[in-house]
Amino acid sequence: MILLDYIVNLSIFSLLVSVPLVIRSFINHRPLKQIGLLAGIYAGIVSVILVMLSFQQDGYSYDIRYAPVILIFAYLGPAAGIITGVFSLLARLFSSGQWEAAIIGWTIIMVSFSVIHLFIKRLSSVKRSLLLFGTYLLIYIITVPIIFNVFRNQPYFHYQYLLFVLLGVLIGVLIIESYVKLHRLNNRLSDMYKMVEESEAKYRLIAENTSDLIMVMDREHSLSYFSPSHEIVLGFQSSELEKMKLCKFIHPDDVCRFKDTIESMFEKPESKSFEFRLQHKEGHWIEFESRCMPVKGENQTIEHIVTISRDISERKKAEEILLQSEKLSIVGELAAGVAHEIRNPLTTIKGFMQLYKWENGSDEINDLLLSELNRIETITSEMLSLGKPQAVHHHQTDLRDLLENTLELLSPQAHLNDIQFNLSVKEPAVFITCEKNQLKQVFLNILKNAMEAMPDGGNIDIDLVTKEDRECILSFRDEGSGIPEEILPRLGEPFYTLKEKGTGLGLMICNKIIKQHNGTITYHSKPQEGTTVEIRLPLMNPIKEASSI
Ligand code: ADP
Ligand code: MG
Image 1 (spheres, rainbow, N blue to C red):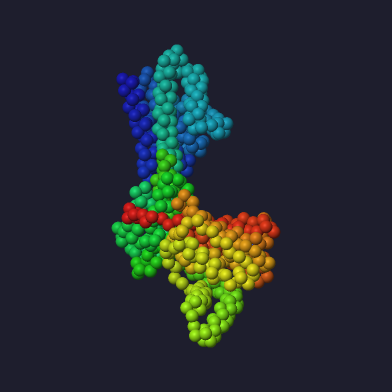
Image 2 (image 1 turned 45 degrees about the vertical axis):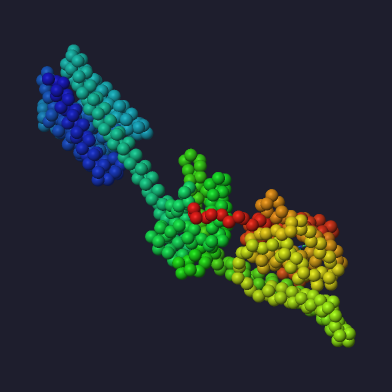
């Protein structure tokens, strides 16, 4: 049964082609090209086996020994192809007679394949296999039936044989191509794995070796990741942190702000920065500056918020020192004015005391004496409180009160320079949460600048209004020399001053303090007309429940 022989031959051939490829895919995935000569020898052995499996048809033996020869020529070139060819020829010579025809046919095929290979080098292996088979077909037709006159009048005999070889070539091509494709896919996959691993290692290296705190928060406000730096910076073990709620170690004054910021980011996706304090395991508070970035998920909604926080304790200390030095310079300057002003009420007291003595006293005089004495007391105590370093405590404060106190502190100097303060506040009281001394420092700096801009005296209007129960707007308007437009953007830069004895720190400190209070400060000015400094501050928030963080 020729069909059965066909099937047995082709099955064994496919098995022999597949086995080394499958084994190689388990060992390593080097491209086929790198094993050229070895593959030539193996294919040679395969062609020997195919000769051994040959079957007789009309006295001639059928085998597909040329299928591996064509494949090796196509995939690995003439050197490996000729090795396979030699094996196949030897097998053929040992198995049957008619050596002359076999050797002539073999030589023509080897020479033609080698020459043709030069021209088809650039084509794909599949095309090369088909072209080489075509060449083989041509040589076979010319030599076997035409030159050697084998069964010239039985074309069916030749069709069958050529189809047999063609099937061998096609099966070989299919198996090798699937292996090559698999090999490429595997290479691409391992490259991708390598890339992913490398990039993950890179990010892990950064995340795990930075002193910044990196945390990722999900929609439910629970932490899905926190960097190991938390252990070093906050002193807690990872296992402890995993169990704790974030609000446990955020400062109670900052919890609301933190929660509000995070919640607003889930609604409006924009990055935000803020400062807050976290508690170290040993109990002390550390100040952090945080940058929060919203991260969108697949359906374009915010899924996570990445927060990177940096310990700014050292920077805060430096700022504190700067603030202190600016305060001291103001205290020094004020001292002269205050001393001068103290002398006046003292003279009055002295005069009336003498009069009291002389006239044996009256209640009116007593009152006046007391009020003047109070005035001295207020001014000196304010000066002392400004000079002393103070701990930062945010309190509910009446801005109106604070403004009045500040104006009183500056009134001696204003008096000397013929300057009038006009305070206008519509509300009886305007409450905000603030650090009293810091805000007083801001008002002092702004008013001092205004006074310095008005050497010939004039009015300084101070207005305080509230807006939609949300914020208050505080404006200081002077009639001084004004600020040229090109200088306005530079206000607040450290050490930027136009004064001979200026420090250029006043407005920088103002900007900083107002920012810390979540407010804004803007400057409007026209040369020779005056300057308006506008401060917006949030009004006191109703206490919010923060336990959900
Ligand atoms: P300093 O007062 O030590 O110069 P500041 O930071 O307080 O430093 O102010 C920076 C500069 O801004 C001042 O030198 C001044 O030129 C300008 N400036 C600030 N406020 C006013 C004002 N009200 N009128 C005119 N110029 C001002
Ligand atoms: Mg100043």
